[in-house]
Image (tube, rainbow, N blue to C red; front, side, top):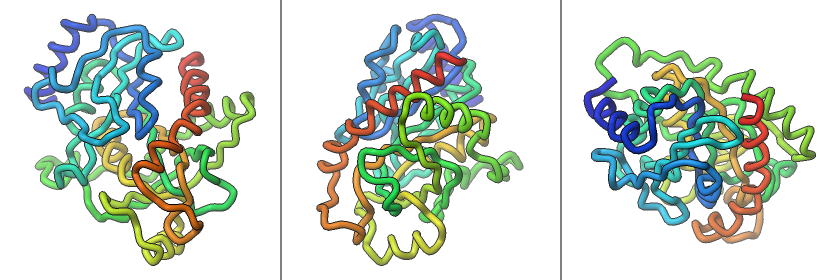
Length: 267
């Protein structure tokens, strides 16, 4: 653990208590309302020196520590994206802190564009794998051999099975698929979407993959869920924009909240 992570962990424990965190949650665009449901303490990112906040509208840059459905959680109400700073490792410090707080699992959420007609806007997609279409990696510059992280089973099978079971019980459509990370901030061209589809991707977005790589590097078990906000470029007549993403994200957010709450009740 870095000295920065150690210092921030102490700051957080002084404000939120020493009880260990079990699960970390990273909330994507338009999904921040889940943080409000946590019975605990909200710490603004600005109060955590060196903690990368998010300047993206639709994100709420607070770290919330407390109880949700009887489980001690750490909720990141926004993430730092590669396109904000050009740093692939922008979420390394927060995830180091999450690990230091005791967590062994991380559930990531994002807003994404679909490339499958059977996963339309408003639906959710559980990530089974990913394609790092950007070619970037948050472990570039890591000096130890720990940087050679195996990614064969990046998305934890038992967590995925539990989420799928909860979706069946709640009557929530939950297809599994492959997520492609595109660096952003511009949206993809129709030609890029055709290329990603040929490579085997089912949805595309501008986040998540760096956090998954970092989390596996730190030894965290990972699951990730996309809230589908639009069909990808060239697959429909709708206009793709960040405002559209923010407007559509709440449609899937209610379903996502049921899945997360259901998973935490089984913890």
